Image (cartoon, rainbow, N blue to C red; front, side, top):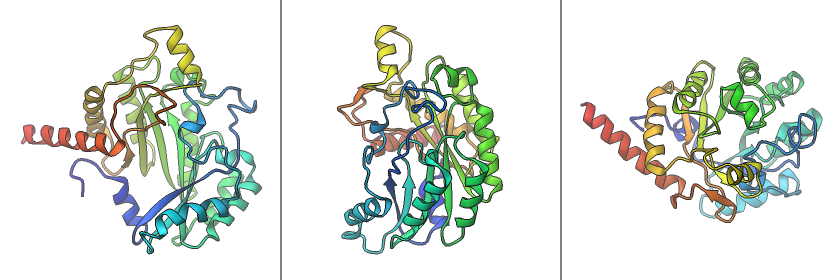
Length: 301
């Protein structure tokens, strides 16, 4: 057990027997911030292919999951799987269509849970009611919302097209429907200082959240942020490795201890990433963070 914070693996071990692995599913849905429902062009930092391994794939849910299973099944025959609806905004394509896709995922041998990544403004009550019927001890449904920041000025600046109130509303309704909820935060968004970022952590603490994902802002090719950063030097402050480690130590100290941390970093593909280029894999960063947390703990002893 990690002595410094609750790890996501610990959370999963309490929910599922044996080893489980998330398998990413692309539903083929778009995003309301891209297709004109709310806006066009998406968030300023967003190039969906940078974080969705199956982006552009139009295979069915069953085909995608069975293909992904092959990689793990040979080495780990007892492995069980969580269907992770991650790409774009999975719930944006309509309630009936998405529930059909969930049903298709549940029919795949070895799938014992569903994780849904979506925006807080794309979880209507009609969908929550359907997901609540699916959610059970044998087939838990977990929902991750892209919160990004608790600051409305930041959300407007990055063209997020929703407010923090939307996030709180979505988290509360999903929790009240009986499902575990997680949120994402991005650290280093334009205009945010350290106190603002830590205030977003405080906002997470105020919600019934079970797990959280953090990551540093990255400038990715083909995004509006890349163009903006090139045109206006100093628009964003990109964390250095040691600086981000020190900041994450403050986040760990601030976060409610029962909330599991899935990750601290994200890693866009090298050919798409402009900056920051740390040269570290996610697990290498986490190991360095753990060492620093240990040092701080020992200094206080």
